[in-house]
Image (tube, rainbow, N blue to C red; front, side, top):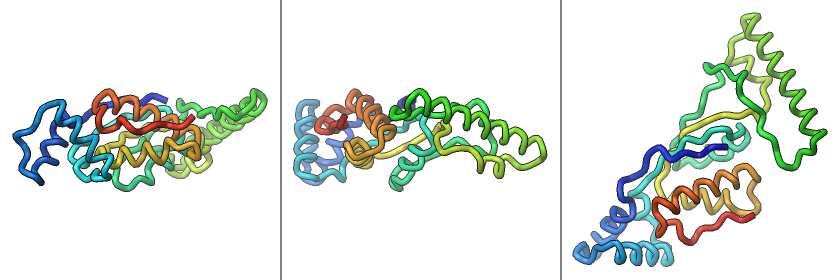
Length: 195
């Protein structure tokens, strides 16, 4: 899986703090140190609505359709996913779950090759790609773009980074958190992805 930050609000922490200060007319108190303190205090108090003023957009590649289905349930985020209707999917790999033994993986890989062969056969016989894709497994790789505000990203990371979450979506949450901590450390300082 590859996760790439492709856009982010410019100077997100300064913007969040500036917006938060409007409520108390305290804009004259702005500084990087004061902004950090204010953002952390707001998060501690549960006043996360001001985090909605900053957002980030990611390109996510090599994720299974199973994980993508979980991710796109987050309705407050925006998504564009690669279309199996228009894109040639034959070069997409099958995502390997870590729980698969070597033997299980060999069987799954063979089944996937058979599905791709049948897909080719169906398309070759005039079946539209949008119908031929029905035989492709949910473990096939896809790519998508996701955009969300920082409040929703915190929610996604908390939920999908929990130990109860599926391994692949938890790995995605860890990648998102690592990137976001580099961009806005005071917004994401308190989150962890459980192993």
